Image (cartoon, rainbow, N blue to C red; front, side):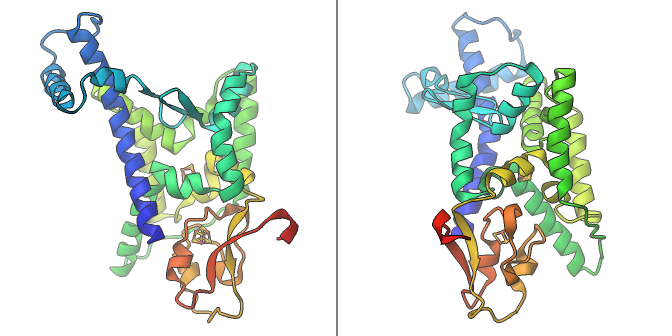
Length: 305
Ligand code: SF4
Ligand code: SF4
């Protein structure tokens, strides 16, 4: 059941990735038809389509633009809904180093996700990140190939790489004054590519980067980016190091079947309770555990775990 809820949230977020630029365009088109905006040229093929959708929205809402203008954001850096802004802490960190300026509002808007991660760990990765859904689907394809007797490589790297990338990214951002993490964060790359497509009807270099990553994960190293290289994954893992909600393993109930370890795409060892800060609380291992030796537990600081 939990996996169904997780998938539903992931799919909803992926839809949002496409919906937000669409709503942004709709707002522009509406402004254009009201004569406030002249960005779009007459005869543009999109105009007819958006004129139609604008009318479609108006069947349900009197003033769609009023509602749409309350939902703003580049989804994976920030999202503002009816005045409440949530920002990605990685964005705040990168801007802090690259601009050498401190924005209190920016910090406050990133605290929501920090708070969630302090309690639930790296759940942004497992429950929200739209690239995770794509990487998971990609991994299903990899497993299918294995069933067909095609044996891809599975090269491992040091998990510390992603922490190094995070630190080096911050240092380079500081020196160059450029937010370099911006180019290394898959959910943001995806978001940028979708925006690029909506506004310019073409794709940028980011799509090639994502396709290369998917190919590497199929053929060379399972779930390599999230496990070893993602600076965002590193930051979430660091915030989640003392998380309150963790997967707990009951040695008495465990029958050593090993299905949980097979289910864990991050290559952790839930069969021996060795999940550590890398665990994103996805619950795949729990779903596979028939004797219920794995479940979520709450670890308050005084419990000492
Ligand atoms: S590690 Fe990075 S790409 Fe992977 S799920 Fe987390 S944020 Fe997304
Ligand atoms: S140990 Fe379990 S909850 Fe943690 S990442 Fe692996 S499968 Fe997901």
